[in-house]
Image (cartoon, rainbow, N blue to C red):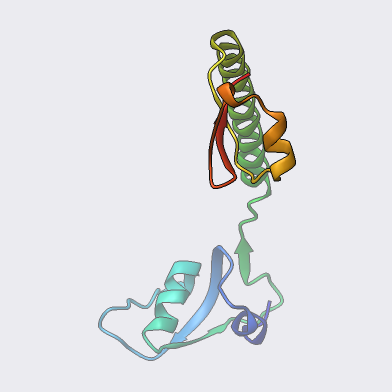
Length: 137
């Protein structure tokens, strides 16, 4: 990886880098071995310090890939969502069964045309200005 490639990225990928930090700031300590984490380089950048990756015939970055952790987290989230969905479906089925047993009024969320309102028996219907509020079966 080159310094230019690193500067072109919107963030510094997690890892350990071999770099030379140019400049001094009392809030930043220069590492004698020139080994810096992505946090160190990000902090140096925030403080206005410049850094250059060491260009040798050896790797200059040890990058951490989050593939294993990412897959595990993704799997756990899918399981959690499936369990929550299953519980929600079961709760809805129980509520629906209770509603059917007790024959509670069913709320209507839409406007019915006048001809449909006339088809519903008046003793089971509560309506105002041609808007059906509720009806029971």
